[in-house]
Length: 458
Ligand SMILES: Nc1nc2c(ncn2[C@@H]2O[C@H](COP(=O)(O)OP(=O)(O)OP(=O)(O)O)[C@@H](O)[C@H]2O)c(=O)[nH]1
Ligand SMILES: [Mg+2]
Image (cartoon, rainbow, N blue to C red; front, side, top):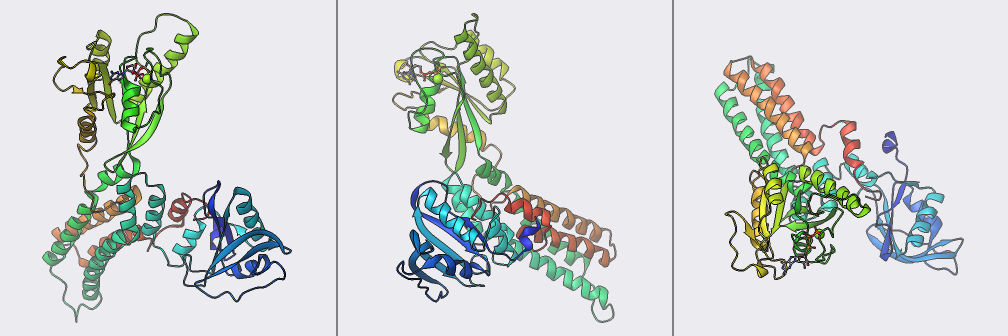
């Protein structure tokens, strides 16, 4: 993707496709103001151009040969004080699909090129305006499905991870400088004691491990989990699905076999994005009617979904008790440690006793739902730490692990009393791995990979 190294002027629509109050077309590059001079005027009676000053807002018209396209305001930023570090103009127009597209077309016709996905942010990175971990925080913030993940991403955007990484890098650099000085000038500078190197390296490893200890909860917040509601027809699965969503999303009837397809929606379970899946009721079908055929397809889908789900909410009707088929299905799921047994319709089965470990609920009057959510959370959080001090993605975790590996080698080398110039090699590699987190040292391929996951206009 070498186009990124070019300094041409790019344009894109920065707001989502669709109708809205305001649409934004963004331009970045040295030609931005020249493009604008061709398509903007403060008046429609005659071509009138303001002197575009930095950090100012201008009112006027986007026009084509003084024929009005839209009434807009312009936000002006001059290089280097802008998001990308280049000249930037943001055209705020009315948010109609067509008008936004027309303005973009005019920009393209008058000297700009359509931006690639993430190209604005990539330019910001290239111009030192945004480090890599902050750029990744921007993507996270845009895609966050829960309040908690938004907050975590905003903290990273504000520099939490960058600052921590830089602190650790400074520590390594400091140690490296002391050893290098002694290696290069053995007459003047004494070698640091091996114990000293070991102590400091050990502390850095502990710090890295502390950040890594939040990996599982970071991954959970980022990726979310799948919880499937399964059980026999009429067990009350769709009713529970609706009750948890607090919306009438799935059809509920007293006819067994109502749900035939997989229906899924996302809910926020205390900061964890939980994809809740309603399924077709499990039962043996013995006739070969078309109706049964369709239902059997649904049942197969249910079985496949059971395989890939992180939590299985297995429901049975308390008023009917557990049937042989329920027992058989639960037997098949025995090896999984993620099954919750849920008895439904508690409002109709007040005096009914249930096995130990069964969570009794009523979707009708919403009893037992808090306990159910708590139990789901317990399964999900059996490993990860619930609170996160550091939120990292897989790439950043790999950089941290690589760095830790090199630092462990440093400890080993000190233990063996290897020459200190050898110790330096691993310290340098540990430094490089940490530098990859913020993009201090990073390959073109990784940069491409990160910025291609942005949307156009960002
Ligand atoms: N009184 C009462 N009725 C319920 C409750 N939950 C479900 N029902 C009723 O039980 C019937 C079946 O409910 P559904 O939610 O459609 O059951 P399902 O498991 O999705 O059924 P299928 O889609 O056919 O597999 C409906 O008539 C619901 O109104 C409950 O908590 N209390
Ligand atoms: Mg259903």
